[in-house]
Each structure stands twice: as structure tokens, then as C-alpha cells.
Amino acid sequence: MACFSSGAAIAPPATSRAPGTRRRSLRQAVKNGVDPRASDTTFLAELIRGANHCVFITGAGISTNAGIRDYRGPNGIWTEAAAAGAKEGAPGVWDDDLYRTIPAATPTIAHGGIKALVDLGHVAFVISQNEDGLHLRSGLDRAKLSELHGNDFIEICQKCKRETFRSFVTYWPDTYRPTNPLGQHVTGRSCPHCGGALLDTCVDFDEAPDGDEVWGPNQVHGMARADDAMKKADLVVAWGTSLHVIAHYFDPWDPESAFLDRREEACSLAVINKGTVCDEELAVLKIEEDVDAAMAALLEELQIPRPPEYAPSEDAILLAAVEPPQGQRRPRAEWSIAGGAVPQGYS
Image 1 (cartoon, rainbow, N blue to C red):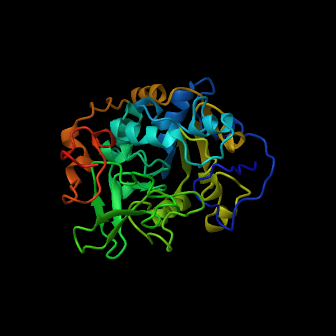
Image 2 (image 1 turned 45 degrees about the vertical axis):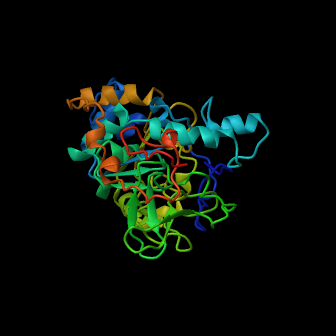
Image 3 (image 1 turned 120 degrees about the vertical axis):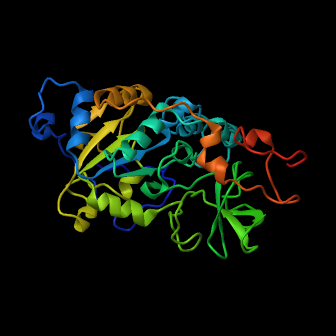
């Protein structure tokens, strides 16, 4: 099934998939002895238990319960843009709103549950299309995370390529856009290590993660790690994503995909998402339920304790955040994570 969308935040590669029409796989064909009457949650738990290399893909839908809007849901950003006759990705009132809602958000049970699944070895790798940093803030091992579209709280030096963590949204105000007077992605702050110009890591339309023309290979986007994880995956679980963007890069569940040139056979796909999902006819399971409720049920099925409440004192981003020197640009408090330092008089 073709999934092309003008809402893609990153440009599809030259090897994009060809359109096709296929039947959805029968659930019983992959149950491997699981009772056909088993609930969806039990079936998902058995899929995860039986996988050798399970990869989770997360999208905007995983963070809506944290107060951050998604893109294609009933109240999504692109839904609002379409209703107003605006083009997806064009500047609009939603940008200013995101500056406030992203730092105000805290990790949900879905974020904490994924961390627990990774810690216990059930999930090998997580590929997130979100910039909100909530996976890192939940304590997820960074070596097992790729933030394909960047992290709003991490800058990369144009010169030495080292990272600088901030407690505020680094791309304020719209530094990721080509119209930025300092140059696209240039934040106006200098690297504390070498004095070079710092870049936000937000991937804009028609840009690619790890793009040599901007950042080069780096730990934030982690494109090489994501690619390697997808080559090994025998189960992909899409949690809170429509897959419309990422399916142009990685779709190992599709037996007709060009991606399979780099692996032996298609893997299984399970989906937890409300609304239509790209390639959902190929999924062995789709749970159309609230992402946090689905995670709570999965953790109970796997007999894993619910994750602890978020604590700012354990927030990996706040712990690593560095304040810019006086005189360098820094947004006001409403664009900052609660608990982070906010010097007076900065704007």
C-alpha cells in the first residue's frame, strides 16, 4: 500500500517503496500456538516474548496524553492546517503553542513502560519520530534510542560536532527554518567546548536525519543505529504513529519493500494507534486504543510493575543541561522545562 504524504517531515530516499495492494495477514498464521481466543493484549505480549529483536517505533500519538498535540488526529496540527487552507509545515499559530506544550510535558506511562521493556530485554531498540525528548526524560538508555527528527533540547556544534543539552526549546524562535536570519538551524549560541556555532537538531521538511549537509552522522538522530536495528528486527511494534513518514525509510514488514534487499525476509508488524495506519493491512495485530491504557494492560500481562512517577531530579535532560552565558539567546520560562534554571531578564 502506498503511504506517500505531503506531511513527511523528512524527504523519502531514492529507494522509496512502490505502491501495491495486499491482504492483511491472518492473525492465526503467526500465533505460534497462542490460543486463538487470546485477547489482543495477550497476543501482543506473546509476540514480544517470542521476538529475538523487537523494535518499537513511536510517533506523536504517544505524547498526546502528555499534552502535546499530534499531527493527523482529529485535533492534530496538520488537521487544523488543512481546515484553515494552510499547507502542512507552513508557519502558523501551532508553532508558538508547541514551544510551550513540549517543555511543559512530562513522560507518560507509555514512555515509562517502553523504558521498562528495554531495561528488561523485551525491546532491543526504539526509533522515535518525536522531538519532545520524553523518551530520554523517562530514563531510556540513549544507546538504544534514535530520535530521527531531532531533540528540541539538544544542540550540536557545527565545528566540533559535540552536543550541548539545554533545559529549554533550542529552536526558539523557528531557527530550524530556512528563513532564519542567522542561517538555517543556527541558534545564535556558541559551543561551550570550542566556541563554534551551535545548531538545533530539528529536522525540517525535505531534510534528512544525519544529513551531511547539516549535522553529519550524530548521536541524536542515530540514523545508522536505526537502520541496523531494522535490519535485525523480527518484530516491529508501532506505538502511537501512523507510520506515514517512517515507512519511506524502514518498512521491513513489507514483503515488497526495497528495504528487504538488506535482510532475508519480512518481519511481523503490530500496531497500537487510533486511526488509519500506513500498511495496517500487513499488521498481524492492530489495537485501536489509548496508548497509555494499552501500555498499562501490556505491563500487567507481562507482570512488569508500572513505572514510577516522573521526578525532575532524575530527568536526564535537566541533569545534563548547560545554561548559556549571559547575553546569548535564551527563551523565557514558558519555553523551559519546569525545574530547569531560568535566569531573569533573558528573552
